[in-house]
Image (cartoon, rainbow, N blue to C red; front, top):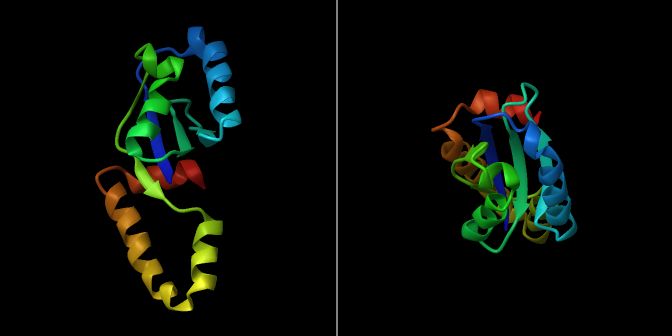
Length: 124
């Protein structure tokens, strides 16, 4: 399963950046972290993780030095599907194309409690 998480820096990350890079590299090599996008204002990141469930994704993100040292916090995880997975599902069953608007609606509904415009600005 894929999960999208948004982190928010609550302190100065500078002293932990070397350890953070090393841990991110380990999680990338393990196939747990798929992508990390830094926010342009350096206030946090958007992280795409692959895990068995939300608890495992939360544990992986919690192992980052910035999180462990209270410099970065994160909220809810949003389950997402990759473009390839969506394409495969649509090719396997063209009737499932009608489910795509509902799936997208669920994604945006899950993000509605947060600022969707700001979230999309960071990932586009």
